[in-house]
Structure formats: structure tokens, C-alpha cells
Figure 1 (cartoon, rainbow, N blue to C red):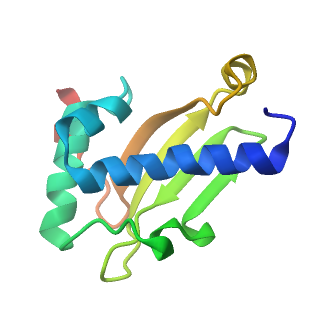
Figure 2: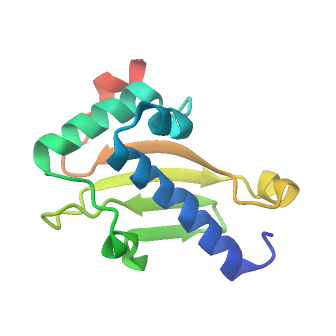
Length: 131
């Protein structure tokens, strides 16, 4: 699957947007499904709470899936998915890492969430990462 660059890029993008959908839903099970050791459930809950104090909703419409909000450095396996907020600040970003070997073995994009942060307020979520 990784040799078909365009297809694999789309699969990675779908995985990254899944993080946005989970955050938008606020559903504990959805958030648990994307939580990782690097970005635990407590941090995701803290991020959702902090985000919603600044913005009225997490957009998941067609513009929120726009290509300008997604970046994938396939040589490094680094993924960034920016959240499109109603105010257009675009200051919240998910980052992740693609495991190319695991993706080849499983035939799907294996992408691990590594962080969520508010670019305008570094350190905002540091207290929520311990849970």
C-alpha cells in the first residue's frame, strides 16, 4: 500500500482527519480510540475543553478537510492536521507519525497521534498530559 503514493497519502489523510472527528464528537470512546502514550486521553480531554473555551465548535465540514490543513512529510513520516475553527485562527494542530513498515505489513495506513497543541499558547496543555 505504501508504494502507491497517492493512495497512501489519502489513507494517511483520512486517519489524521479521524482525530478531528473524534475531538469534535467529544465521545469518550472516540477519544480513547485515538489516545496514545504520547497523547493520552487526559490531554485530549484538556485540549477539547481548552479549544471549546476559545471556539464554539470543531468543524468537520468539507472545508475542514481542505488540503491546506493537512501536511505529510513522507520521508520523515510526520503528519500534521490543522483544525479549522469557526474564527479561522487555525491555531490548533494535531501531529502524528506514520509507521511505514507496519503500514506495509497491514495493508493500511498506520498513523499514531503524537500531540495536539494550541500554537498560540505553547504549554497550555502541559498540565493535562499526565493523566
